[in-house]
Length: 467
Ligand SMILES: [Zn+2]
Image (cartoon, rainbow, N blue to C red; front, side, top):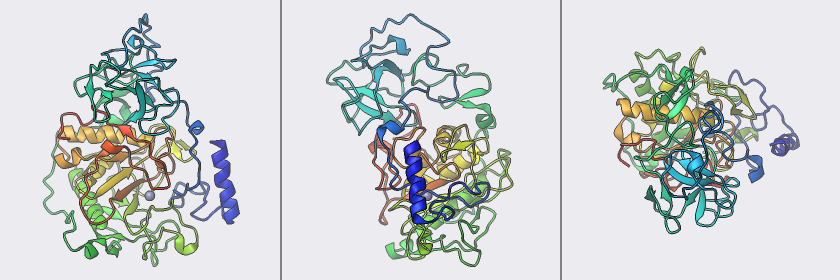
């Protein structure tokens, strides 16, 4: 990333500012001064990403598959066949065989250049990544190989919710109790550090919460799309404090559509009510970050420093929010992890994963949500924890079947990899009508300035729930 970092700094210098919100280089990240998402123009050349699959999914789990339990490779099973371990799966044209939730596939030779691209795969397979997982995978075509899994709409052979493999020797498998290293627990198929998973809130649904604000806007398109501000600015459940150069007298970056404002008001209030008995974090109000300016412009436009990529944070469709935290004084926007190059490099030790997941899970009750983007390290644990809260009965069933999380553990060019170590981003669908775009069509981009690289669904996440 050296070249792109240089390009960003050079662009800042050219713009004559290293301190403004558009080009700030980590000046005071401990408070609220660094909400910069502006990475428009940063290239995402394939070579920028680490080699796909050089890390075991889950990151913190024991080293590369098979290291601690060497087995005699027989590598006899063709792509599409049933497997328990990577070593059983045939390599194809130099691509290593891997076991993907019980189905043999091969590792792509580079990050997928597009959805279903062929350049990175041997004949008879095509390239996609997988929801909640790292790396690029060559998925066998059902027309080319015998398929022991299921054939999906792309005519790829995919695992299903009944197939799985051995976590200790397969690259992409769900853990079972006992599979995880000491200091970790298996939560929803992922080994998560105990610091993230040891304080599960127990069986739901918890308090009834009868007096929540209205979730959905039922007025005219003009009414629901009108740009408004939070009033009051501070409640027990949210805190729209002055941020990124705002003053309390001029919160010029804090305008959003009425339907989005209502949803945030509802989901923060619901989280406060539901989590009343949880000791998983500081329990304070959720800090709100950038939205749009009053005329719909990107925040910062008024001071010639638009702080977000083109076509995000316009017309009140987007909002940045803090993560709920633990071991901090409040839930203001701040990094929740050790980080470098604007992304978490370790598990987010300051994240209140359960409140954050309760909140984001409640956001998915709305049929207007396009996507929620978070840091890659946060995304792994939040996705697992939302799944857990669904299983435990805390979250609504519609929400559990419409989870639209986006995150990048490695930089795949969707726009989520950087700048989300201190906040989450919620984006509504365009227009005024319901949209139920689940992730089947691939991870949504942050904005049209990023190239999408769609991924396939992970059948082991949210299993047993309605599609
Ligand atoms: Zn944002």
